[in-house]
Amino acid sequence: MCEIIAKEEQRIKVRGVKRKFGKITTLVEGIDEKQIDLKEVAKKLKSRFACGGTVKNNVIELQGDHRAAIKQELIKLGFAEETIDVE
Image (cartoon, rainbow, N blue to C red; front, side, top):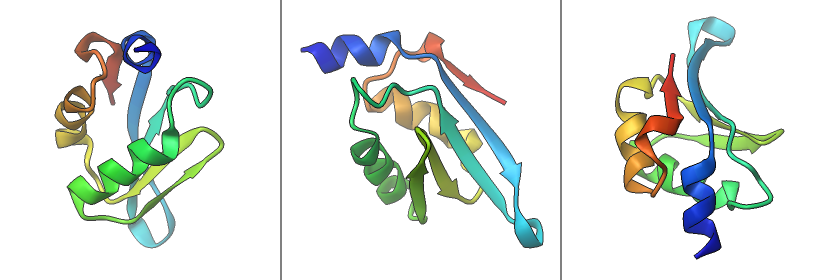
């Protein structure tokens, strides 16, 4: 029950960053590591988008540009729609 409440309180920021060789990486920031298991969320996102990724410094990094579809996927995982900002 606590995790459901915690998911609704998060301020999530999603942005794309250009890395080496012109590759795009999608970053998901703002999820509190103490209340929500970041590795589990990253695992579900990687599986859904069929990409690689990791968790570094409380930020989920996904290989590729997934900004268009990631908001809907986060909503399916239980995060509130109004708390998700996609840049």
